[in-house]
Length: 215
Image (cartoon, rainbow, N blue to C red):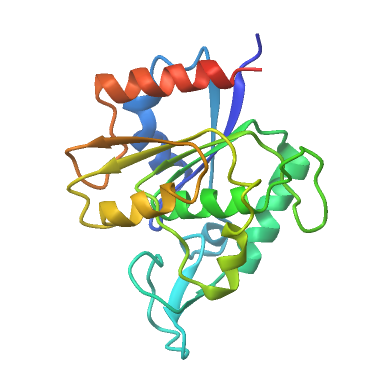
């Protein structure tokens, strides 16, 4: 049985190296099941950060946020990130699933909206993968992206949603609301905050989930 390949997406102020450290407690012991491929957002190469910057809809360009807390925002950098992700799948794929933490979780959920449910990529659905694991994630607030959540078939895939009841960065209700966009979400809650939790119950559930997704 081959290992699963999972594309892993970091948070707003994170990086691939930061995410590896944040994931370590969760992924230790899972290496026989999966390869966790952590990547840097394209913005890091030019000294910036994040998968996008959320700015107020009327154009306050100096407002840099991840995009989790406001409505009617514009995500500056989304187009670049989208092109970059499509290229990663084309050049470094295939990937069996996606993992995202915080803003990376929001991105991973948007990638679900860009996947081809039948596994045959097209111009408008250029990605192919079979599951998603989201941690401290939230729904996009850029109205241009709202249509990505509308395809029931796209969101009919196995998904895990790890949510901290005491999360002060992304409110737990925001993560639950995103989870309900998915047709069969497995919601795993913990008493901590904005972290990649790895208590024994969560570790066991993630291992079971990956075993079920194994090719």
